Length: 350
Image 1 (cartoon, rainbow, N blue to C red):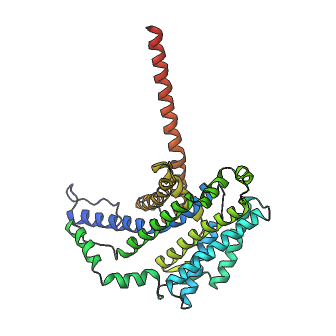
Image 2 (cartoon, rainbow, N blue to C red; image 1 turned 180 degrees about the horizontal axis):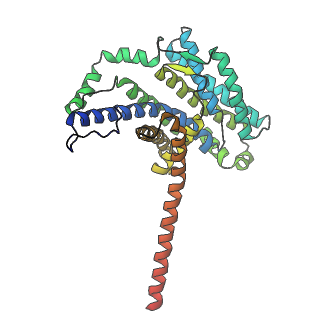
Image 3 (spheres, helix red, strand yellow; image 1 turned 90 degrees about the vertical axis):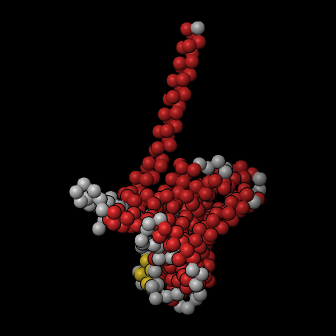
């Protein structure tokens, strides 16, 4: 029974149905936060390329799948899941470096170099996987190993007991994935903050702001761009590896539109939390990724919307995040001008 369905008897909603609907909504939002914190790693990678380097890197749609494909095929061939995940990040780093080399050494337009690499990675990913889809349901993954170790701690019972005391009857399958990914994502966020404040990170930021200026200081901008794109796509591939293990499969089409999701996360986060400092900007990206997944989940609860409408919802969210701040700023500017005009009129009268 859909969560948005209204069921009433003699003008009142039965308590059992209200509680069931609240439980369903909580489980849906919990799943959205869980997946959002994983996608936040990808969003941090997009932030590095689009905001820090000012590079429109469309490699993301391909490198996300590369991470998933490398992790999946490695796990299926007996490689420990943690090592397979590291391999996935390295594969993404290589893909990003190739995009950077194509742009800097091959003198190919930045947008076109990303498109070319994205197209090439589609075939590469098919080669890696051997077929369009690889199931991981019967394989040992990072999350399955974590759940096995977590079960012995009894912490699921502790958290679910808190929910039970609040009147809920349905609980998440496990809290381990969410807590692990919060730790990993925020560790990556803090490392990114630290890196961008080092001399190399400052040079990377300067390259994105003014390439000619940093080149005049004898910095090798080509190397910085290549390294920056490599780091960006390694985070994207890492997110892809986690998503594949979380969902139980790797698919050659799972990266379609991923760059839009990443941009939506960055733009929504910046609009809501601001970008006054690097630490605040990266926190905004993480928060934007989680909020994006929650909003999409809530939107899909509406009866007339379907799963296929997700791209439309994403587009509308990005439009709202881009237009709303400008409208608010214009309204504030208009009020400021009106106050100034009123003050001048008072002075003239006096």
